[in-house]
Length: 154
Image 1 (cartoon, rainbow, N blue to C red):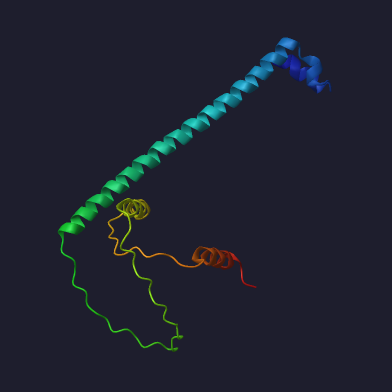
Image 2: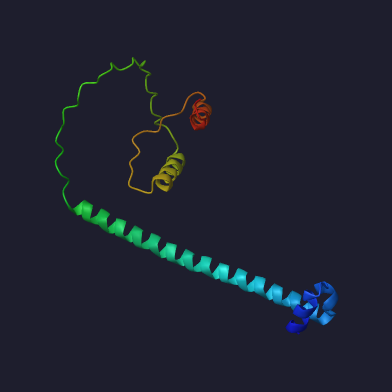
């Protein structure tokens, strides 16, 4: 069949004119099977890589937990103060803004939600010293600052 096909293609005839209906169906099914096999092999490769990276992450978490346990057992090294060098340029004068007073009459449910959010975000040991309300439009200012910081200066 393939030699006949190549001979007729060599004579400048079109492939669709030389193939019968049954041959066309077989040609289409072969192409479809090839595509599905390629997709299946791609899926299998990605699944194997996913299993590998999950095992690496679990091993890294276990080793960091082991080093954290060892670090808790060993005493911390003494801290030696180092004299800071004098600044070459005098520091700019920054106005002192008074800290807002911590809120003491919060419901325990709200404190639990804030503690859970801190634990989920930091994923490490933490201690909440105070819960202080945010005043003003600080979120909008921070968003603008990030946008301006992402732009290239000309």
